[in-house]
Image (tube, rainbow, N blue to C red):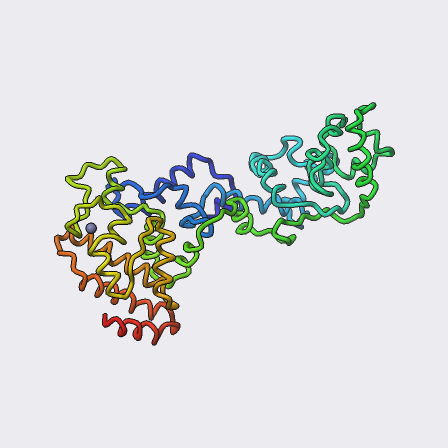
Length: 390
Ligand SMILES: [Zn+2]
């Protein structure tokens, strides 16, 4: 972690670390196991609000941590290294990113400049560290909103201060300019006239509405926000153990090793049919947990009719609604888990699938929730279990 906060970790090393992290996640501590992963690493490292498992993406985390140095530099923090770099390389002229200067460490930090600028907008002080063309000191970034005018600029790397020091605004351009560029010239000149420099250092404001830098917020922003089904949030909020929640996350993603999934993964099996019932239907997620006679009997024992919906996310919503108690999500997760456990005991330990044993397992797990919920369900869960006599 210390190295992550200080240096840019090479891609090859991140790859090596990820090999170990993947091994840990899918195969535990058996170093010789060759079990394949159940879901793409990309989904594992996606944030939970985006429907992922929330495992940190090291490269992004590394960048989010290192950008803190740019934050300190651009805000002139009173630190020896900031003074040193400033006095050595930028005191008289230039902006970081325009010239490649400094130690290998500083050069690697400066490479993250586009990421930093994606998060920060400047508040003009003395204008020394703000790029006239490339920073969003007014409405939008001038290079992007005035492209025709920019094509006539004499120097694309000037700071706000250098531009403001010009006697005439038109000195910045190769004259004459085109008609279109001239319209843009008038607009930009208006903004230029409004710039007032003072003697304090420039500051930077972040897209999260503060001038305090946060690596965590930077990480979140780099990872982006996606539309996801609201059920994921409820799963992570539930009081179930992490192993149950991860199991259910895989269930929602349809990534459990059901037999049809093993077929899709090109694994040779004697049969791809469900063994919990006599129907000889292909063992899909939908069949095993919702349509199979065994599963139906398990759900029926707690008053639920499994829905005829093959989308796991929507099926979960339906199950949850049927239950309509404050711990519906916990019930849904644990009953699904218990059905999966019965199926695996039958396949791997030759124990007949029995609805009674499945509901007993379910009831045992649900009672454990009472302790995890710290008082929230002290009476409601036992009452609910009594209602169904399990
Ligand atoms: Zn079946």
